[in-house]
Amino acid sequence: MTNDLFGAIEGGGTKFVCAVGKADGSILAETRFPTTTPDETLGRAIQFFRAQSTTLGKLSSLGIACFGPLDPNPSSPLMGTPSQPPSLAGAASMSSDVCKLHSGSLSVSIPM
Image (cartoon, rainbow, N blue to C red):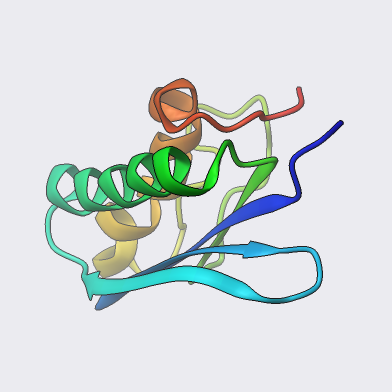
């Protein structure tokens, strides 16, 4: 049986919003914090999802939305990073970093 908990990240140049919800649209947990350095911002997102996984259970999936345009090519080394504007490059590329580097530590099942 699949857990019906879903994680969400809305990553922007000024703030990040992280949430955990259910398929019926109810939001069980949410946090907002300023976008700072990639390490600090990702660290806060990971900390939030780890805490929620402990409290609520393993997430079924994690959706990530960022201000774009983002490189959509899965074979590109820049996949998930914005091409414009350059000022958002550090913040928005974090979505790709979350998937590539931290999916296992977040207790999220990501189908490949």
